[in-house]
Image (tube, rainbow, N blue to C red; front, side):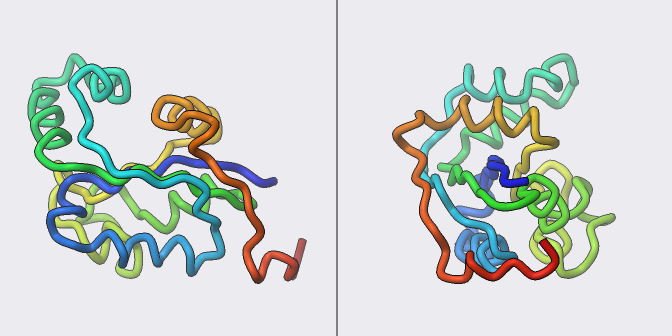
Length: 151
């Protein structure tokens, strides 16, 4: 099933100059980039996005971190995109993330784990709408999209 999912390349990705390497991992997996923009997030947007962590003692650190530099917001599309992105990203805790995953290769701390990926298809829909207007998303065909082994 074709899906869309949100990925946020967090401030440490931008300031370390590794956004291209991370984007390449999703493209190599066969996903299509259908939305992409850079922006500095504001407090209210972060509070909305991370509302499930609002009561945690470390929430202020999340706000400080997520507003410390620009982020790159991406929407990826493809068959089972949510699951493919989640597996490509790896475990939330980088010490548990397997080598070859984004967090396994590029992250060291839970608090600075390089990337956010939508948790499931329902969250992906909400998150894409939170960060992108419909006119900021573009459908297109990949050159290899006609190849459908096993589908």
